[in-house]
Length: 203
Image (spheres, rainbow, N blue to C red):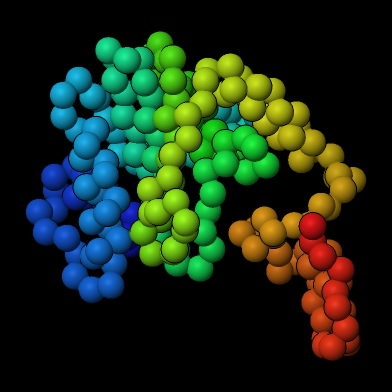
């Protein structure tokens, strides 16, 4: 995934003129061609746009894969490239935009400091089948992002509590602490001891 992102960044910036060979070529090409739609006309764009939200909480920072801005429409486009083929990622979860996309959108708004009317959020995931296709988008408003920010600040501060509850879920698969997490350990031990018994769901 990291290598595919690097190739994509080089292609978008014109530093690489040919798509990388091998199985990643087709996927990276989908990503780059989509982003190039926002590299002409009134659009201003950024690839691998870093942002810092540490004034809300010291641990809040990140990098958006691709960001573009149309001053005529005051439209902000934020794209997240997913090279993984195993788990399809939805742009809408439980009726609201994907929180990772909202996070990137918030970061882009904060860094660019430009007037925005519409935040166009999207996931590009060419290697994993999804009913809605490899490019999936959803629109959010500045008010949606402000509502998300309020929740983000509360959640970020909650991580400072040493007695904060551990709430498992499907998100655990991405957690770097899963190998030392007591909840994951307990579940693994249950699987080892009772291989034919149904386990308690994460949901």
